Amino acid sequence: VTFEEYVLVRGPALVRLARLLVGDDQLADDLVQDVLAKAYVRWSRIARAEHPDRYVRRMLVNARNSWWRRAVNREVSVPVVREAAVAAADHGDRDALWRLVRALPERQRAVLVLRFYEDLDDTEIADILGCSPVTVRTHAMRGLARLREKVGDAGYPAIQRSTP
Amino acid sequence: MSDDFEGRLTAVLHHHADRPVDADALLAAARDAGRARRRRRNALAGTGVAGVTAAALVAVPVGLGTLGGSGDGVNGVAGGQLEGPVPAPPTAPGAAALADRPDLVGTNARVVRYVVGWAPLPVDQLEWGVHPGVENVRLALTAGAQRSVDVGIVARTDPNPDQLDVPPVAGVVTREVEVAGRPGVLMTSPDRLLTHRWLFWSPVDGVDMRVTVTVPDEDRAAVDDADVVRLASSIRLDRTARCAAPMQLTHRPTAAPLTSCENAMEVGSDPRAVASGSASFGEFDDGLFVSYVAPAIPAEVVPTDIPWLSADPSPGSAPVFAPTTGQVTRIVGEFQTYVSTTGGYTEADARAVADGLQPGGRADELASWTPIP
Image 1: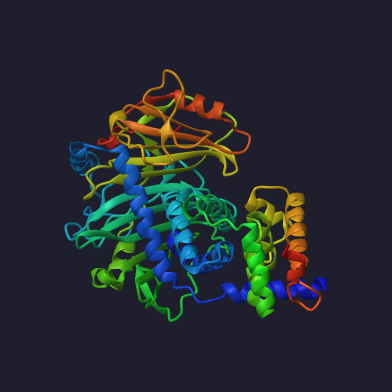
Image 2 (image 1 turned 30 degrees about the vertical axis):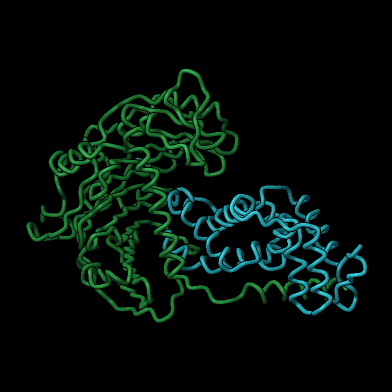
């Protein structure tokens, strides 16, 4: 597969994945463009990988982590989690849950995105993240627990538990 | 609550991600950024070598001969009528060409069993290489004042059904064509920012070939369907190109065979870069990768603001720079070389290979390039 063919076919999916990883459309576009530019330079090697797409997604996730810290420096802090919970309580809709997802630590969030959006199994996620399937399950369990902590049975965030 | 909650989470993720993406714009931006990245890397390696490039421009056709105008090829391209001959890579003496042994396509990383004879625009860069099961040639062409047209040619005997041959672009126009007397299918997309053309045919029984041409909208008129067919028809199936490098690889991993090889020559407007290439030994996830670019980086011009390049503290190896941990670079003659490893191969393996690289040819004399062992 050529670089051009790959981008035309898989590029949109990469952008959508990036939107979930960074939470901002413009930043997602920039991140994917940056990753694809790196892939372009070494495409001849990537193209012979058994799963080129998995390799590029690994580049994307890893780039998100380092790039985010270096260029954006918008790591979510505890106050943001509380803010998200308050906002969630105000709206009680899917935007509220999305805010909570955005407030998750990066690895937990990446695992949940890859599992529930990309529909990958733990082995595939582990390959992309460069960790073991056990670690993937741990991140998933903790991420889901963290979300459920903020979401009541009715699906509304419980700000009484998250606000001191 | 679990299933319901996870279902709601899935819906939330799709709600916040599933909006349209302009794939053409993404490709154009990514390719421009990739080229800029490559230029920066080449510029870093090629300060002040305009004279070498000029020599390369002369050496390629003089030393090895252009292929486009001979007119005696398998595909019957008329001599003297080719307005854009493609520089000829070094031949692989004794190796069977595609016309004689189509069954060998993609089986030997040291041999490309065909060459391209003509291009519709001046060639800025020529690449040729072999990966398992696939032999490919790439051309970067200049339209107007910029290098903007990409041409990819692929030959293989066992098409992988998983290969993404044609992206699912809406509105693709398909028509039947003839390529050197063989039936082919030409597909053209009417995309807004880029025009894509794919030409499929079988030049001999048992081998499938594909030409892919991508042209930006501003240069749309520079290439048409007839150009793509003519380029495909110019492919010489009775010539070979060898995997080689302007250096000797005196130490290589004994347990890992050469699995792929890429070579590239800058032959056009970029006065800074002359040649580059790579050789891969072993598997993608368990192997050793050697690459080179000419000429080497003068230590005094290495900029300090490139994050992936920093001084290598190894004693007695100046000037040496380490892009990242686990990779080794060396100056070999006029080349900057990089050796990296994956899987069970270590940085010590990379250093052993790097230490064994010896000068063995000139970048501007393709005939002097040493075959990769």
